Amino acid sequence: MLFQMPVTSVVVGAVGDVFENEGAAASDAWEWVVTNGREFGVNVVAFLIILLVGKFLIGWACKATRASLSKPKNVSELMVNFTVNVVNKILWILVVLVGVSRFGVEVGPFVAGLGVSGFILGFAFQDALGNLASGIMLALNAPFHIGDFVEIGGIVGVVKETNMMATTLTTPDNKKVVAPNKTVWGSPITNYTALDTRRVDLTAGIAYGEDIGKARDAILAAVAACEGVLEDPGVTVEVVEMADSSVNFVVRPWCETAEYWNVFFRANRAIKEGLDAAGIEIPFPQMDVHFDGAPKEA
Picture 1 (cartoon, helix red, strand yellow):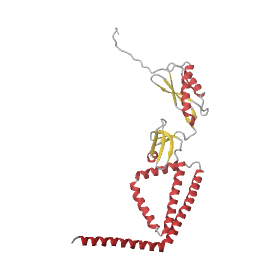
Picture 2: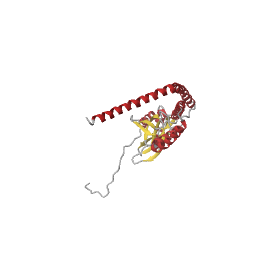
Picture 3: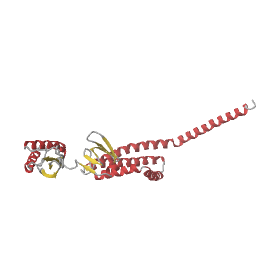
Picture 4: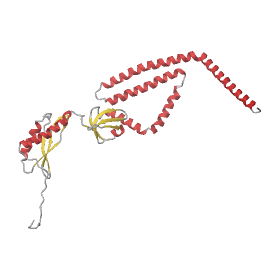
């Protein structure tokens, strides 16, 4: 009992202080509401109005930017999307800063803080910034477009998607490859569909005992008659190599880019059929073996 009374007094006193502090805080909050509530409510409404108006203006600005950049044919879709995204982000930052300033917040220190933070983040995200810089270079130079058949750093496929960070390709055997833009821009880029026409490179071999002129005429007539082969420029058929088992011709027809593989397969078949029709032998690989000083019994 001797220790119970003091402890009870302390607990009751602490509880009383808590209620007294809460009452004081509630009183201060109510006083602030009475004094500044109206002004705060007006600022909240103004902030919401600024956001709504800003959303409308930003949407209009993005549409206008996209429309103006889409008119020139030499501007890539990647560049258009990048520019629109930059305009959208910058305008939203400005709108938010204008809205926050309604509450008496100083915008200057915030902007300075963004600069310092950006400097620090630049070191932390060097690879990401490298991909972004490479994406900008791809957008400005436009070495390929969506749907082009390209070879990038040993990867062959159709471009399915491009953004500021990576390029997505689909390979002929239906694999999806996502390549960072830093790798794409840092590698040789071969665009097979950038031009309207392509040359098809083929090889045909005949036996050493066959007539070269007759074989050339047969190959030329067969390939020139293939569907999809262009008349201008004409088909080139010339001897290119004296191989181990055959005399090889290089055969080079031209076609529209979209018809490349169709012409490739048709021309190969036409060469075989044309040589067969002309009675010209297409030799198998062969080797002559000579024995010197063999026993008579052999």
